[in-house]
Length: 100
Image (tube, rainbow, N blue to C red; front, side, top):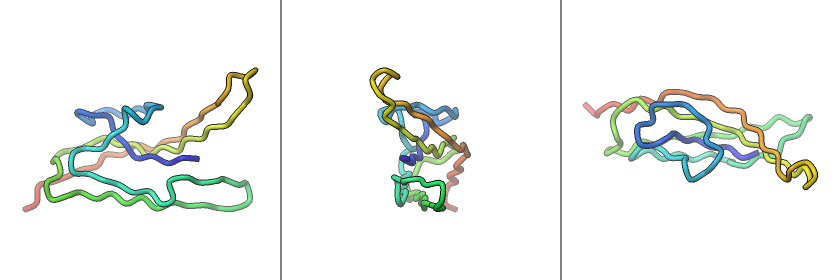
């Protein structure tokens, strides 16, 4: 399972899973790290990952709609169409305010 944090540029004003890395982005001056970003799931073992969001001093100010998605891809064979992908996501609003 692969974990992602992203929004949809340029306005970051809608929540939608996009299914391709080319359309995923974060507002200017915002970075993130997910550790680990890839998880192997088991029915018997709990797992977790840490998400850190950092805003630089020059980050774009505003409210940004972002998503944390967990994508699972599984090879299902050529007869069934190749790779099956499923996604579970959580949407939230990140508010960046000017430094006073």
